[in-house]
Length: 218
Image: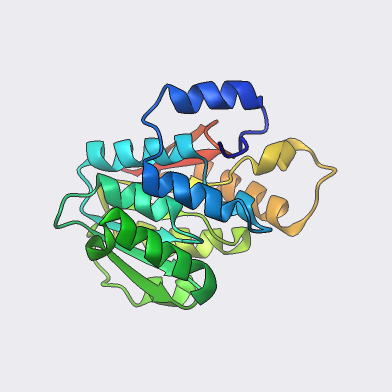
């Protein structure tokens, strides 16, 4: 079992949470184990967040989705599992190395036909997308300094009632501790304040994983 990403969960409670939701399938479990060997393994979302994202994608009826930050592919597998057969997930990442792991997982999960990968700066990939409201769902999980740019590029392309999910919004509990002034924490504080005041969306910051903010376009 992966270590809990929620800083307030004990390993025992985390195990219970995962066991009492839809568990990772064989491909996801293998991906957890492979990613755990990497020095930056904590970049992977938690299995309970993956279960939520599959359920949420399916319940929303999403067909057009964008993901910013793919890493080794756990979140993209989770989203793609919730898409219909004709659904489309565009994944934006800068690493050929990490996404090569994701590509294998997509094929093993049988969802590779739903996924398109663009390697390069996500801001450029998003800016090149059609300038119309066609996205049902987006997931942002990349460099925190870039979050406002990704958010603005996405929200203009999001349908009314479409949703943006934003990861790591609690920063391991450092978000309220002013002693922490590192770049990611400071950037996330500014982003959280920005979207909380944005009248274009309804928002809820969930204590799931390392903080998952849910933003619905009005």
